[in-house]
Image (cartoon, rainbow over all chains, first blue to last red; front, side):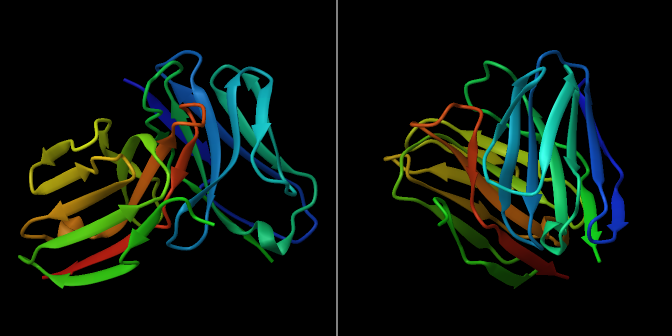
Length: 114
Length: 113
């Protein structure tokens, strides 16, 4: 069966510090991968998605970047965090070629920038 | 602006009552999904509907996709405290690649014993 893990679960960082959130998927090959951000108790905003190694699409201009160094690894980064980067970050995967794009989410990473 | 509008934003009911959550749009979706999310966790897929007018039942949950594929509803019968959570609808636009979903802002449901 497929599993997805992301870490760290909780992170408290000062403004201006770097960020690295990591996500890995097991049990499937060539998945589509996504990074979402969620405001407290609200809907999800798509940040990045990837259909293959090294292929990254950005949905919104921001202080963040994403990379996919391996087929089942997706990393969210920032060189200098802003206060507005605080939030709940979710990694997700979906099947390549799936007709309905159903998403399977990781456990989430809570980032607080102080 | 949110392509999918969910209503109500918040719903608090007693155990045993029924509830309905709505997800509306002026856009046509190729498919629509419902997720439930508990605090501090990722959303979990409940159901996918793909055909206009489709009705799916999952135990006490009934999901309906509008005939025009622009709206959907989630009805819970005899709600239980375990139904508490944030309910999110998400859809794939006909004009978007299938992998990109549009999410509603969510409906927070609280079921008290």
